[in-house]
Image (cartoon, rainbow, N blue to C red; front, side, top):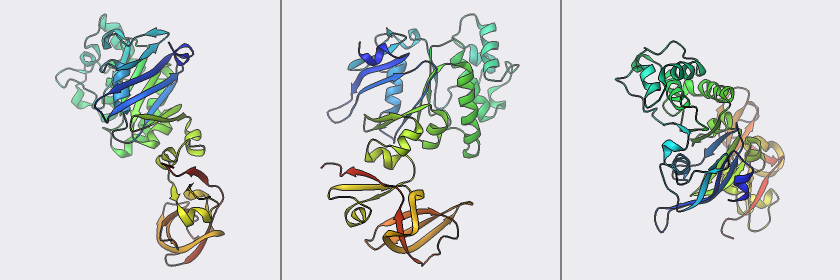
Length: 325
């Protein structure tokens, strides 16, 4: 058992699964504390859902272990791992009412169902039809069903993808508060950065089956470990060649600079404002710089006008070696 396993409530210890000669997930090692919410973030095909399925026991790894409370559960069936799962589309049964959905497959149903619904603020909803509920309420029913057997770990696969965009921000705050109130260790999959930042205590960024970085939202945004993380998390300008050198890079270095770190009227680069997008307290300006690249600058709404020739400097840049060099 690796050191990761001994220091944590939930651990992935050198977990790896191979699908073909060219597609492999891992090896991935992660240590997750008791009561922590960890987000698995990455683009489509990065391995997020596969890792979740390995945790749940729906997939068997080719190497490595899953450890919960110092118990290796790698060889156990999903039902024996004491893990609750909330699926992307909730998997509720439309012909069953709320109470029957929560009770499905559960022993000692009555009291456990009532307690689970109370946990998710749906006390008294036992006889409601699933079709009568809002999307957010259906999500809470799925959560109640996952919590009813008193699992050690809660897994959530894209938990907010079924909701209208207007509901997601409010619902993710409510979901985080609920998970923290229950006190359960949780891992969830998302490809939405805002969702990961709002819900997760820490975020594990995956890329092509590899773990790029694990850290707090601040770590990932302010101190990305790689160019991929820096460009994937948040808004970013990536500059090479002469434009990068104008901002202090050396040969073979790539510069990453956030739009809010750029300043009109400062020395460094020059170009012409091509677009302006107003967002209220600020605006985003697209500037075509003299090297032909597009640069996004966040500034005051009256900071420039379309067609203006501007100079642009950077308050802070991040430098990375050119990938492959």
